[in-house]
Length: 296
Image (tube, rainbow, N blue to C red; front, top):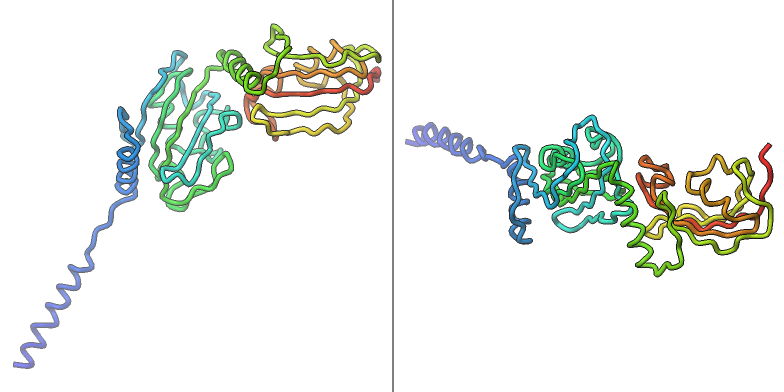
């Protein structure tokens, strides 16, 4: 009997153990969708469409421009937050992107943005809100965003994207500048036909400034969120090497003069920006020209 029990019982234990270990786990796509569904319910988010990729999207402003392709350079204004609220990047002054739509991942921006903008928004000039699953964001391991924040693994994102048409940038810049001036009580500024707003503090009594002048100047340069990117240290440069706004307006003053100008992106560093200035940024310059000489 003992021998029979041993022969019968041990195989049964093995069979039970085999079935007990045969546990199924949800895929990352299923986990992401459950996380997104919970987030949307908690925040009463309705009217979203689910793309076949798993991205949820809702167009708040339909684009009126031409249809976007991955091979197009598209100026984007992006706000981004994780669904758990741990990360928030919502500064529309610096959250700018202006390279090819198909290059977003190269710049550490989620593939879900690329999919949502092209397949959901479709046309330039519109605004779209995206709920992006982690597998189309920063994945299981997380990562650092284009804007410098660190997103933990398995974290879905709530993203809003404004896709600008390059032809509409002057109007967008003008709205941004007027909001900035109103918020900071900046009065007495004169507009130019190129979209610059300026105010002369002192005309100056020194030499006139010409296109071929070598200028020594001090300037404070700021983004419209108040971030200072240039401190007032003395610098000497030919006028014809400076940004278009300076070439246009500095001849209005002389040596010893001061001028403040709020500059649209086209008259500053353009769509591309620079190493310290985000793409298509409007800028605030306070300038004092301390010396004017002839450039040899």
